[in-house]
Image (cartoon, rainbow, N blue to C red; front, side, top):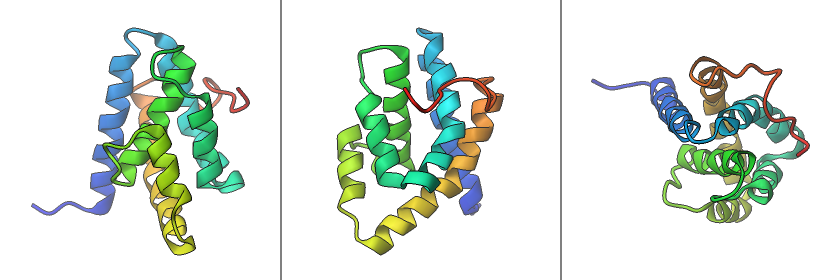
Length: 139
């Protein structure tokens, strides 16, 4: 059976958010921050651009640090999955976006924003994070 693009995006987002929920068992702050980022990331992309938004999370991220830093790293990894860069590290995802021509950059931005609606919804339903809680976007 053939599935629609929306179904594939929804499945990807659900699997990513499930991974966050599993990571949050060790540190509940991960779920709170990631859920907040899910709500604020599209606004950041529209305001600053995809590259600058990713650069913000790469700078804030870290694999073996606090829950806040892990949440930023997960976000960049999930953007990489949306753009079919699954094996890329956060810095490689950012470099791939930085190296795009204008049309490719615009298509990647559209793909991320299109898929991110599902991340927002699963952030609410799976992680239990509303748009008023979690990451404030300034830290």
